[in-house]
Image (tube, rainbow, N blue to C red; front, side):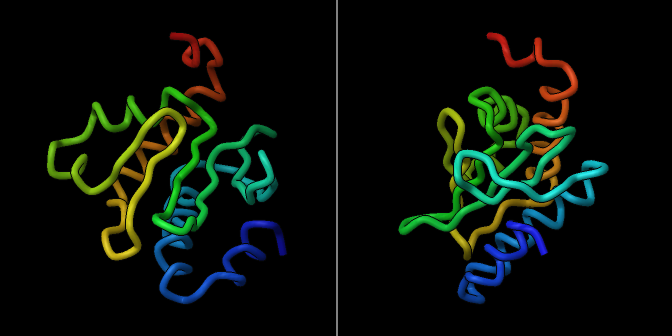
Length: 125
């Protein structure tokens, strides 16, 4: 069992379900993901690079794509109603367990981060 699985087991059921769902959609979206740790967070790794972490905080669930660019790119590409379901700033996407991210939003986050890992020039402003 890896670090993501260990983290999920430690969560209360109400938090485990939406966090597990994000990881499940990510695994279905990107090939060959492994479990690891980045910045002290359990994360999914792609080609040895941190792809995505999802953590429960006191006030929200945070999705961390290990990129300052991805949250803005994803938010800009979503319809207004999808954008209203979460809050974001540089490097973080936040949502509430009772208002989980749409699968299309999760896939967009994963795809944008995979693209950055495959082509590091995308990380530059």
